[in-house]
Length: 176
Ligand SMILES: [Zn+2]
Ligand SMILES: [Zn+2]
Image 1 (cartoon, rainbow, N blue to C red):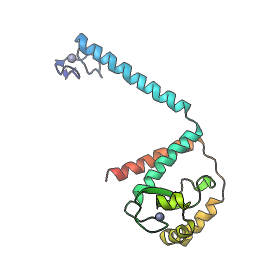
Image 2: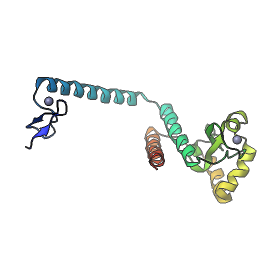
Image 3: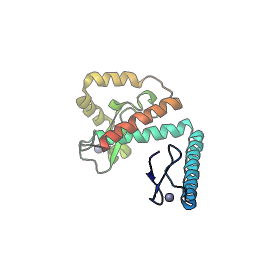
Image 4: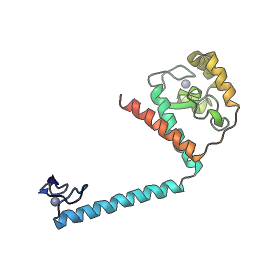
């Protein structure tokens, strides 16, 4: 095999294994053992943590990523309800997330909202409705209304899927 540069001491060495990244110097071998141990422990810890996560934990995580996407998608727009610039940006549900599970992660149901309308005015729904119809159109609004009445339970696998889809969408915004 061709000589390589040791990952640790930067000297050249002749590897005997395909993925070998360090030379045979005892110090470099120790570094490699230590690094491998840490990597394995990190992997194990991540897996242990994932095994302990409940559906509730996944819902929370999915909501965080989804809301982040909404804030990025609507960046620069005014609050969907009061139509003023939002000082503190929230992602506000039109149909309340806890009572309308089927549209909890529906993009038509969640828009950029100021904290005042979202929290203190409980969504400021009368104005929200009007501006939502203007924004997405009456056709989409009626579909949303219809969907909001359906019940829905999410499995961990479905939530994982939502998380990965919205993580990717968030990333595509952040790369632009
Ligand atoms: Zn070395
Ligand atoms: Zn507002």
